[in-house]
Image 1: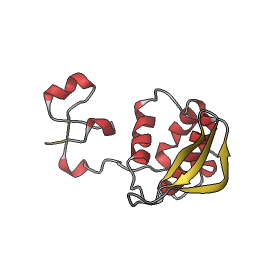
Image 2: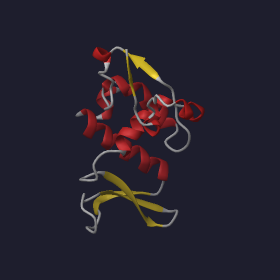
Image 3: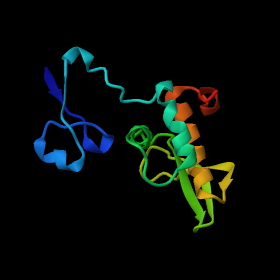
Image 4: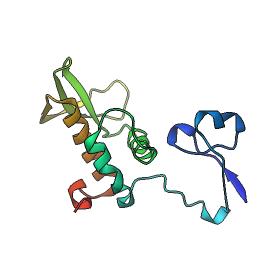
Length: 139
């Protein structure tokens, strides 16, 4: 058996005992089974209902892993929310991927409810990572 480590902030495991107190664990697996799912796939669709119900706040480990994948993606064309009126309005945007360049705001993608805005970002990131619309996976 080999010991593998994934960063704790990715919902992973660590071989360092000192991290065990921070809800990390050591995982010992045969090397041939290292095909851990670090991306997002249709197998993760069980967390969709949880996110839809509670887009802001604490999440299950399974949903947190999916969110960590989404949030850890490249900044090139990454969907983000831009607060266009403090505490009142958010607009969907795309990051340019290069420091110093402006965020591209998407016309007509304005939200007055932050939870609805977060759900839209989740839907778009889901499609980007799985290649499928979220609605297709919940049927």
